[in-house]
Amino acid sequence: MHNNREIEKLRSQKNFLNPDISYHFLHEQERGPGGDLQRVNTIFLTSKECAFKCLMCDLWKNTLNESTPPGAVLKQIDYALTRLPEADVIKLYNNGNFFDKKAIPTSDYPGIIERLRPYNRVIVENHPKLCDETCLQFNDSLSGALEIAMGLETIHPDVLPKLNKQMTAGDFKRAATFLRSNGIDVRAFILLNPPYLTNKAENIRWVHKTVQFAFNCGVQCCSIIPTRPGNGVMELLYEQGHYMPPSLETLEEVFENALGLKAGRVFADVWDIAFLSRCPDCFEARKNRLELMNLEQKFYPRITCNCQLNYA
Image 1 (cartoon, rainbow, N blue to C red):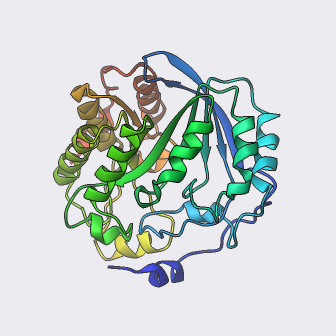
Image 2 (cartoon, helix red, strand yellow):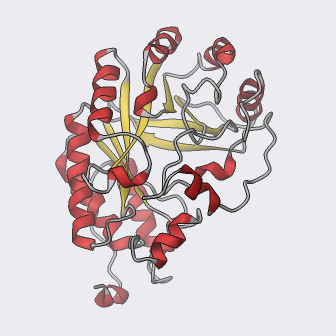
């Protein structure tokens, strides 16, 4: 197992960021809780690095070393919103925990809430151990619904403790139950091929079990994320045989299985998934299929290609 110090030692340099400007933003569509297709504005906020240094995470690359200056988040939101179209939903993702006071100063809450009034739904990310009364107070001040996205990752009893996430499946369940009982929606991030799970069949099985667990906890939406290399320690784990990059075929299979549960919305994370592909001839078509299934929340036949004859 690797601790915070060992994980940090293997990192490269962070990206240079301006604390007054959100480092990225985008406009997209997403199937909503009621089945309608919703317009979504996503703002990737520049804020203090997450205190939980998860083994597989590379989001620290776009964070600050020090606490986020008061007022900076408001400037970032204004910067992005003047460049984004109207939308129904807004995601404020800060590569960490929205309710970490060092990442999002509480003095900025009133200004944030005022800027969010046009939106029917607000989605933020947060660690299960930081879900407390602050979430409820923020929710009570919003004009729209609040949804909190939490990293469940995997419920594999041997793998989850090794991710340095400093939580258990029980912690996630308690947080989800707390939020749902107080009228806050929950989505879960689930890893495909986390470190220390290198058997293809076992990866498929544990994604399925983790998605089922999430829905049983009251989660309404699951996002399946292929675990990527690129943060230093993941390269070391690959060399040691403790990490196996997923394949596009495996992502297709676990996504199809999760949709088949019909227990809630399921999304396959297709951001920067070219590393999953072994064939340039079919990649774009297969990625487009996953995107369509994300939007429609239903199965479409797989794309056939001669390259699939070589899959193990």
